[in-house]
Length: 81
Image (cartoon, rainbow, N blue to C red; front, side, top):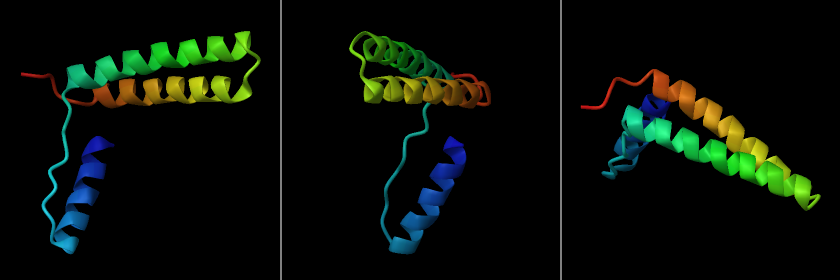
């Protein structure tokens, strides 16, 4: 998914005549971001339960979904060198 987004942005950059280089994170960076999102999501869900805050729990759910997507994305990337 990251590769497809970078390609689409590259085409847009060419069409607009600008030169913006997008980062291409390695497997290790993607996996560490997935772990961070999982921890933050779990913390937000716990805070939402403790403080009876629906928006906080919803943000936590989004963080966990993001973690799952990042983990799947990281499994498709080649190993870092």
